[in-house]
Length: 337
Image 1 (cartoon, one colour):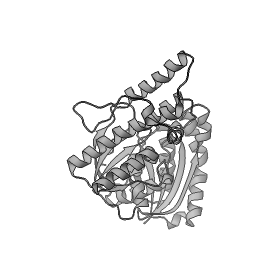
Image 2 (cartoon, helix red, strand yellow):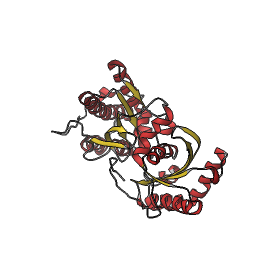
Image 3 (cartoon, helix red, strand yellow):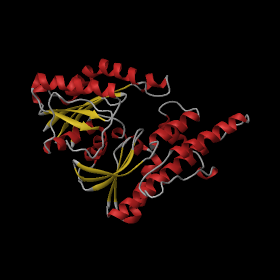
Image 4 (cartoon, one colour):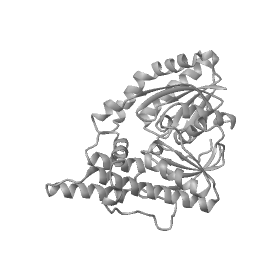
């Protein structure tokens, strides 16, 4: 089954063709990073306008790269939640129009389910059930993936997501957008023991996260030093901050896996590209004799191939939409259509 998928939830306009949920026939991404760098973050209105400008060309490129025409496809898929509402609407409306014109089935896909499905493209033997840590700029979830379309959040952040905390700390240290990537690279050169930072936890909720206080602690350190005319060693502070975030993520994730009896652990989302998180989880699973999976760097960020992968399983479950489909800025990953 060949599915043309479209992703426009934030600042990447992407299209891909995926076969049977596991094989990428094409994947095209038009990034807006350089433009949003000017503002230190994504400007929703600009993102929406750029999606409008790019989407037609991106879809054409995806079909050309796959050496297919619209008549060769079996279905269309699109990210419809969650994300920036204006950005989502561009992809949803474009795909609805294409569905009306071609008669192809329309498959709505949850963005975070797509991030999890990125692992199906990279690991042919991976099948549910498993426990997944979904970490990105907007989300930090521990998700029980019981089946391809049956998921439940058992732990989540109570405030900032891990990726948001990385980006804001990096920005305060003077790093360009997207800050988390730069912080990760600089942290490789630093000494994480140079600073003692708070290890936040949520009382009564052992699988939940809290990163707001940690982020504020780092920002206050930087501001206090600046007010005294000094500065802090950025590499060391980056390393300490990164280690503290990763400590929190891995501790809760491993505890949940132990308590619930999972031996397949999966990472997903933009922060799954973090070098320390990948090393730590691989080592912790090796010690315990568990299996650890994470996507290649090319599939960690937003892309349409992951949407096409998840769309295959949504279609098999009968999750097909009509032209009344609308974009949704928020939606639980455990929703049932």
